[in-house]
Image 1 (cartoon, rainbow, N blue to C red):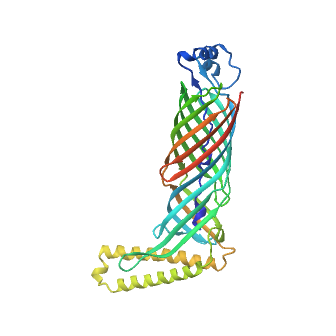
Image 2: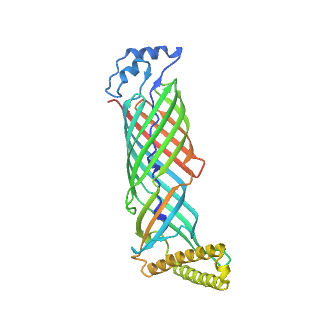
Image 3: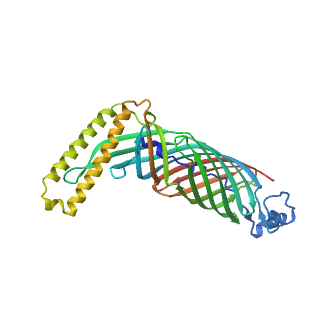
Length: 369
């Protein structure tokens, strides 16, 4: 049931790599002269005429791109609370250990943009995606010796549909074909299983170089950079139990888990009852006893709630609350773009290192405003 809790929203981090380039060098003297002499015909960007008069080759001031993204990443979960059928939430942070929590997402977005100033691009984000999350976790309780043992292991997986809206800005500058871009954006993703939209911020610095081809306006750009994703830490929601877990065979494992918790409680009570009054006042023993009871009570409440939900698994619901974050906020990027003309360009980018892998591909059309 935990699979619904995490969905990735960095699918919005895609933009066409264009920039205002300061043309330099004696061999480009004719180009520089023509840029300075020709009247700049568009209203945008603001100060575009002055930039062109200084020898900057400006991209068309507006564009629209369509982009595809696939990504996979690991997540870290804290402050986990679970309840069933709208009953009370039980804090499981102490007894649940995540063996694996992996998020996958694929989707498309449309990104309209304009150059507000020669060195500042602003854009909108409209996206549809299909995130899925697989979570493998175990419930642990301590015995009389203080050793923690698993009483239940579960695997969950869920698929969702998400709609994303957002905006971004990219300060950028280029000189002699070399360029730097500092992309940043903010987005809200609506997922029906979550109580409120998931908010994400992305920062993507890139440093690259464009290489001219024989035909005018054609070039290939290569770049390296980074990708930083920050997600809002709090998530709450509700979902049908049978949408995230295969319940076949689960009842037997839950029954065994309840039995193990009962045996553990008996062992702890027997150990505590065998201590002398002085030993029961020992802070070490008191802490051990309180920890064991707290963990056993939490595990018992969780397993009993799950047991009741399984009696009507076709209608059972799971409520949850947690904090989550990407295991690694940063990963490394390499990318390339082929500019067929100042109107058309295609690009591809690959992100790797750390715990996140992503592939981005896009097509962009630009025009003057």
